Image (tube, rainbow, N blue to C red; front, side):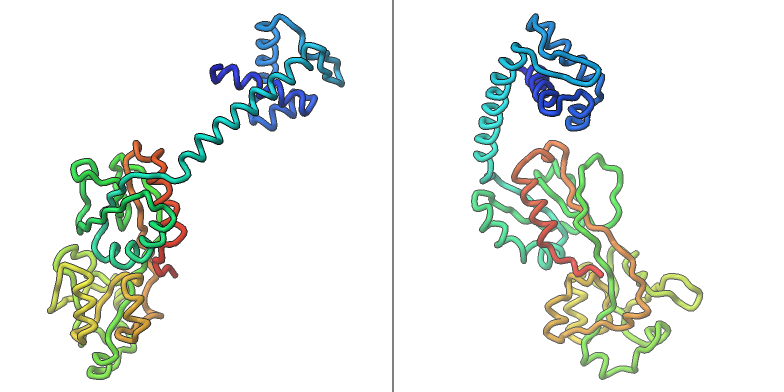
Length: 299
């Protein structure tokens, strides 16, 4: 039995259920004219009249009653078969290769991996870290995490949330240097900067002219993790994503500064993948799990 034949039977059953073409159309979310054409086509193929129609009522004929019993059995049997195949896929298996920048892997992905594997023990996770955007096919990657607005790359994407950059320093550093009460006070402090991605050296603060504050760092690194450790070691003030400093804040190694002055600039975070993977059950399971459990420290 092909898809069209199944649809004809489903339409027939819906008309019987509601005794109305229009109500059947509403349930199936198709045009009433399509319902009428389908019934006419079915009657023509079977060479019978299925309904006695009046302006007010639609009643089954004897042939219609006979078809109803058989159609119901067919649809129920098809549902059972579909359910069996669905159950067979409830424990997806295979490999997921995930690529993300090191800070995201360390602070957002790693904390949820054990929980995911307990639910889906047949899925093997391979984590790799790249600081730059990679070619998924060339690197044989199933999923990649992209932070920031996406270019039109032909990839499918699911948004995981947003990250927000804030300013942090160690309590020891703050005790040893002049107080920081306003944005202009930063000029006399050691601001830690990025050697790469220089746009990250524009901090989410407004200077006296209403522009984003552009820092002039004396100490730079190409990794947010390195800059964070420098801040922990009292070397200066760092501006990084809030989800990367949860442990340091809880332990008191770092504290947030100028929170009122910091502009809440949302930086979107996406999981990207090729369209072929959109229907992969193991990929869908992992994406759904990430969306439910990942902690980005959003505002």
